[in-house]
Length: 308
Image 1 (tube, one colour):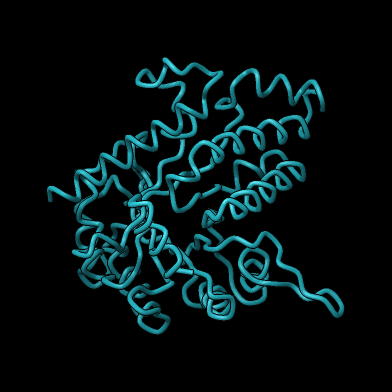
Image 2 (spheres, one colour):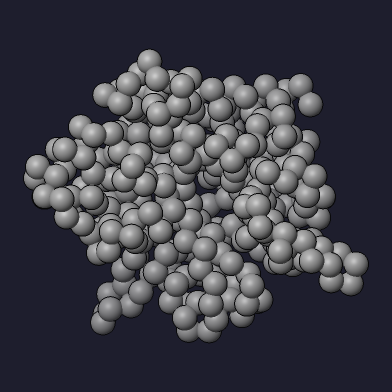
């Protein structure tokens, strides 16, 4: 799957991923009104609203981008109906030939980790038949429990030819409370990066490993170090735009071949119509605002890479 991601990045010339993280407050009033008219002000109505919101954004951007990253918590908050909207979103994106990174941040051990891996990336046996559950192409994983938590995911990825992005240095302000602590003279995030690189060496495709890392755009210097520590790992870079990251801050996340990283923007794209720069589109044309935000993001990152 990592090879397909690379191919799509090269074809689109867009090393970006759209984060489908639909807070209900992001959904334009006319979309909510239609959903509530059909299902009422219920969890089912909320789920329908976010599904229709997602669908419009995907319809307006799928030809520009290689991948999307739905954050599962934004769907879980609406219960079973929300999870059905998550699955509909995953399936719809795949029908548009987009790769799907399930931002699920799972982290457990043994049979529990294996069940998470099967549910999101693998298959589950039901009598004489097998079924794919959510069937994303990649998943994010929390490595805090060590290899016991990561290996079941790696095993499923090897079997299904899918991939992982393991949390190494996250974009949030308090990440340093743990991730920056020194262990034998090195920050913990560097040690985690070394472990990701080790797992990657053992599970490598032609050029890049299918064991990638998450490193926040808000920490460019750490990203520069981690790029060297993990030369064959693709880096998923959250924190662009709304959290402060810009194209010029991101060049060190990429290798000299112009690959090796994919940059995420969530509300900066899906709620673009709320920003001053895209207000002219109005909430009626929120999908067009998202498309323009994608085009601007691509130009920003591409320009930064060309002039580094």
